[in-house]
Image (cartoon, rainbow, N blue to C red; front, side):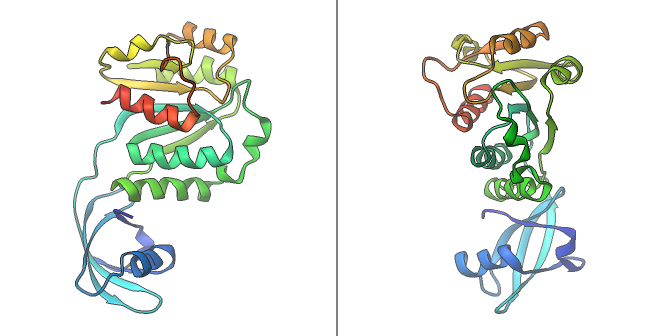
Amino acid sequence: MNLLLLFPSDFTAPGRVRLTGRRFVHLQQILAVKPGDILCTGLAGGSMGRGIVREVSDNEAVLDVSLTDSPPKKLPVILCAALMRPLVLKRVLLTAASLGVSEIILMNSSRVEKSFWQSSVLREEELQEQLQLGLEQSRDTIFPVVTRQERFRPFVEDVLPGLLQGRRGVVADPSGDSAFFKERVTGGVVLLVGPEGGFIPWELEQFRLAGCCIAGLGERILRVDTAIVTLLAKLFP
C-alpha cells in the first residue's frame, strides 16, 4: 500500500480520520506505524496529501490528514476488453487502475464464455475492491469507470462510434501489423482487446468498418493481462 485511500465515512471530524478493518491491519502489521509517522494519503475521487498518525490501538488508528495535492493524470485511453476468466479479470482491473486507465468497458465477443457474465467478480463491491488495490499501489485517487456491454453488435454499432469521436480506435489482434506501434500515437485512444483465442474474423471486420485499425504485437501470443500491459506501454511510452 503506497497510498492510504480514504473515504468520507472514515472522517470523524474535518481533517481527522479513524481507520479499522483491512487498512488498519495493513498499517499495524505491515507498516508497523506508530504515533508521529507520516503517510501518503488521498480521498477517493479527490485530492492527495499526507496523514500524521496520532493514535494506534489494538483495533484502530487515528490520523490527522491534510489533502492539498492533485492526483496524477489519467491516460487518454478507453480500454474495451472482452470479458475474461474471473482470476484474469481481477488482475486486469488492478493493473488498469494502477496504470491510470480512466474507463474500462467489459464487452462480449463470440469466444467469451457465457458463464463469465455470472462471475461474482462483476459485483460492484468486488470490482471496486480490485480498483482500490490498484489505486493504492500507484498513488491515485480517481477510480476508473467500469461498464458492461453484454451484446457485441449493439456495442459495435451503437456505442463504439460515439467512443471514436476524437479518438483513434486500435484493435489488438495477432493478425495485426506490429509496425503500427513504431508510430507515436497522439490524442485519445480506444483500445479494444479480445478474449483468449482472439476476435473472430467477422468481429475484426466490424471493427474495421467502424474505423479502427488492427495492430499486433508480433509473433508471440500473450495472455490477455500481459497483452494489456504491453499495449499500454507501447501506446503511451
